[in-house]
Length: 111
Image 1 (cartoon, helix red, strand yellow):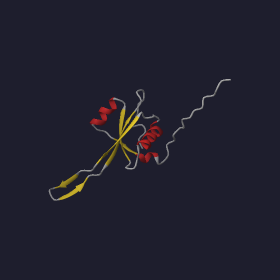
Image 2 (cartoon, helix red, strand yellow):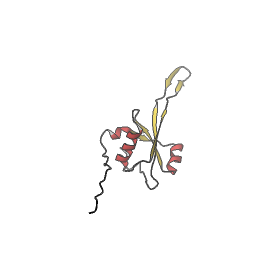
Image 3 (spheres, one colour):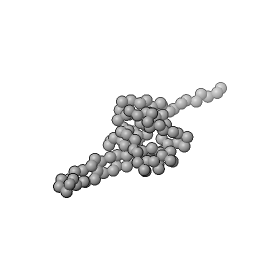
Image 4 (tube, one colour):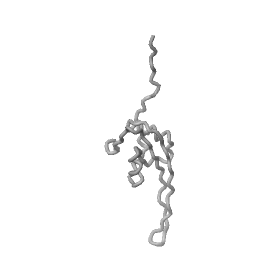
């Protein structure tokens, strides 16, 4: 008798909360350099984990990430006209590595 293979991977469905994890794609020189080696940069929610980001990319874009790196960029203190000071906002970024054959069209799946 032939054994049946059971698909253990569950399909991840895009729910309303998943769209809150990925805030926006980051467009910069570093992001352009990363995209040459099949990577994408996103601004993510402050409480998002690597697993959350990987799940969100897979649900929204249909591509399972190979690796996710997260960086927290602290807000700088700025002086306005030499008098008052303020702080820029702190941003959490995720650099997502994709498989070699995957293509991500960020404009197509924009919110």
